[in-house]
Length: 196
Image 1 (spheres, helix red, strand yellow):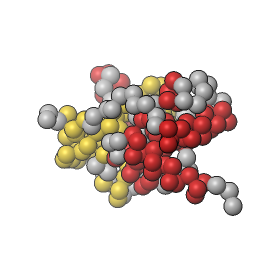
Image 2: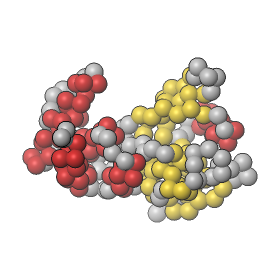
Image 3: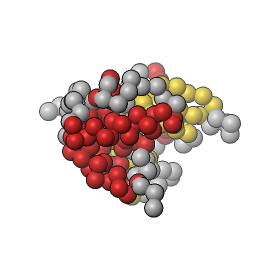
């Protein structure tokens, strides 16, 4: 399978397909990356940091990440470049190298997208839960079990994004290929989110 070269942006958080993330850019290596992506229209990879920090020396990224596409940008109040990115395809990092400017570049293999997968009956509760979360957030939807809320992959990604999970738990969910397995893991975590 052919590999694709993709610059990486290691972060302390996980980006999911279809999800959004706000970034503040100030390091020269990432300003150059944003400039290149803006000109070419290409994305870059966001991976959870396994070791190291977001700033300074190149961090060690997780092996599975999500392609990020820039959808908006503006200057922040403190004069930095603020980006809004949207998650696209998942990828697996096969090998990395660090450029002279400290930017990590990876050879990646794109992971299969299952497309729209119908929610199973045993996971219908998760569609109801997500609809309630969306109601509280003021996000419009068609109702539990309808539209995107009937798609097992989409429901799993949004709950993994919005439930109070640790970054390592989010990463484990990102790495699962089967949307039903992802939803089952979320079902098993639900009791932990109940108030005492």
